[in-house]
Structure formats: structure tokens, C-alpha cells
Length: 79
Length: 372
Image 1 (cartoon, rainbow over the protein chains, first blue to last red):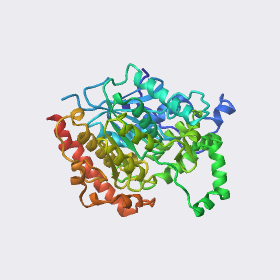
Image 2: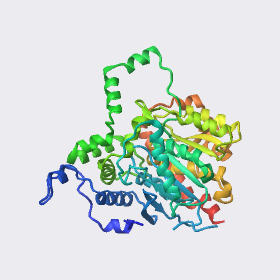
Image 3: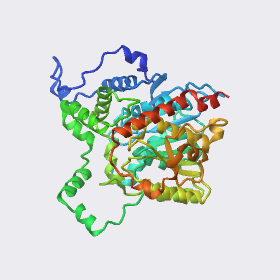
Image 4: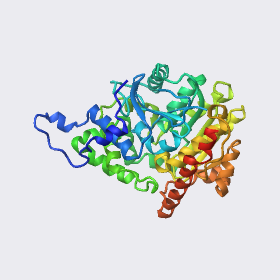
């Protein structure tokens, strides 16, 4: 089960550069610059997006059966 | 951790991701344990190299991935409410028919690929032979997906995505304003990732989003021959570019065989129902779930508000009672609501409806009935 970028954790992170065309950072390759996607940035973007849209329900991110899954716990705990 | 709450498993549409269900979560998680899944090779799911060769193998690729997910040890073992949006609706319907024992209620939110492609008139055919149409068709058949354009744009892909997001969701609800920078960054990230599941699109849909092998006739066959007995709920936005006509046909056909099927329109929403009217969307899902699967959801409910109207439905009295004057909306009217976006008045109305439904869902009868 993957570590969770929970809303609380996401809150403490810095926002990503969101616009403009980034210049290559020192040490990065041309390919890194032209294809700036990474799985880590994707996970962070998901956490930021959920936080910025008011998701306060505790959730867990996991790779389940080969698919990225976000599991939100319902406040309801049973009849 | 799986709780005792009823489970809803949600699959997103094309060029999308599970995170986009975010706005509907506050209401949905009042009643469900929500499990939102990135489609195979989409969203943040691993980008397994994949070269589709036909409609059949493309569907099988998706079905194998659904099987693997539902067979995983973390998956709910009891029948779930299975919700799919757009392409996710197409795939969810296929999987539900393949594994009917695992699905208690199938909810299809503006599913793509329900009807057969119509017979075009001579005039329409002329339009479809135009240079523009030919070019678009060629691009489509050569996998020029929106994601490939974002990848092609390299570091400028962020700006491209931001521009599209601003334009696409310019009328988003006032009750829940979208946070464009983080939304655009998320969509950018899931688009810029290497291509995989998106390559199946040209084998599933023709240009114009007509399915090669539409799900409507397959659902009718499964529903009328006893292959699929679970309730079915179709949801469309009042400003959806997809017509509910074919869904009405499916619902009418399977109802003759005793399947509890209905079609609903969520007001003040387009194709992205759960983003454009999240409370209306969640209210419709919850109401349908209580109406059609009461044993799963628990005892009793009161309609959460006038956020949606019933269309050609034999069942939901609660829906009709809740929808007021709009409940008489006819199928033909619904089909011609058109593609125009709401004006400012509509958005104000949307905020009003959203606030009303939100209040009722959060602290009102639904929550109370759950605690009873």
C-alpha cells in the first residue's frame, strides 16, 4: 500500500510552479526539461488538487490490482 | 480500511482521473465509502505499454484490469454501487454485465457509446466529408489524443492545460469555485504521463464519439435475457452534449423484464456533472441508491432536494416529488436541451440549488436516516 499524501500532509507542501515555461534546472537533462512529468509530481498534484477543493475526508492512496486507487473513508461507521 | 458503509466504486472518463470526483465527495461520503479508481493506463495508474489492435482486444484489456482490481484482496467482496462516467461508464457497464454478482447498482453518468451511430442524411454526410472532418478523422485514427498534444507541447503543456481548464470550466459552480491552478496542474500531470490506456480510444469510438460496438444494445440483451438484473441509473447533465435518448430506450427495454432502470437529468450541469453540480450529482446518486437498493443503503430516506428531474422513469416517486415542476420534462425536450452553457442567472440558480442540497445532505434527512 502506497504512502498517503493525506490532506494534512499535502497542506504542508509548497505549491508547484503552475504556469510559465520552466527553464532547465542545473543538472537536469534536456529530456527532463521537455518532459517534466514524474510520478511523484503527479501524486503531489493530486494531493494538492484534493486539498484545494476542500476534501477533508480522510483518504488513502494505494496501488490496488494494478490501478491507482483513492479510498475515502465514510464518516458513517455502520448501522 | 473497509468500513460497514455501503461501497461505491467510481471510474472516471477519458483524459481524466479519479481525483476529479473531489467536489462530489463531501456529499457522497455522507452515505458511502467512496473508492475512486484511475482507469487502466490513465490518471495516475501505471502506464503499461499497450498497443491495441481491435475493439474486442481493447475492451478485453480494460476488462482484465477491472478483474484484477476487483479480485485484489483490498477490493470489497460484497456487491457494490458501481459508477462510471463517460468512457468509464462504457467500461463499467461492460464489466457489470460480465460480473453481475459483484454489482448491486449500476450508475452510468453520461456514458459514452450507448447508441448505434445514426443513419446520416445526405446533407449531414456532406458535412462529414468536409476537409475539416477528414482531418479530424485522420488525427483520431492516428491517436492524436488531447494527451498527446500536451506531451508534444513539452514544458508549455502546463500553459496549454491551464488555458483549456479555464475555458472548459468557466461556468463552474459558485458554491464550489474551482481552484484552477491545482486543477490544471493535476490534469497536466495525468495528461503528460506516457500514453497507454488512451490508445484504445480509436478502437472503442469512431470520430464523433459513436461506439464501434455500442453498449446500449448489449445492455438491452443482458437486461431482457436475465444476464443483468441489478438496478441501473443513468445520469445526464441538463447541458450535457450527450443525449439521454438512447439511455431512455435502454431503460424502457430492460424495465419490461423487471429491471429497475431510470434516467435522470441533473440541473445546471454539462457532461462533467460531478464538477459542474457536485451536490446535484451526489444527491441524484444517493437518492437512486436509497430508492433502488434500500437493503444496501439502510432504512428510509427523504428526497434531498430539487437538484434533478426524473426522465421516463417508472420508479422513483421520491425523485418526482422532489423535482417539482421540472419533473414533467419530456424525453424529447431533454434531448434538445442543447449544448449552450448556463448564463449568470443559471449559475446563481445553481449555487442556490447546490447550497440547498448540500445543507439537506450534510445535516438533513439523509444523514438522520443513516443515524437512525
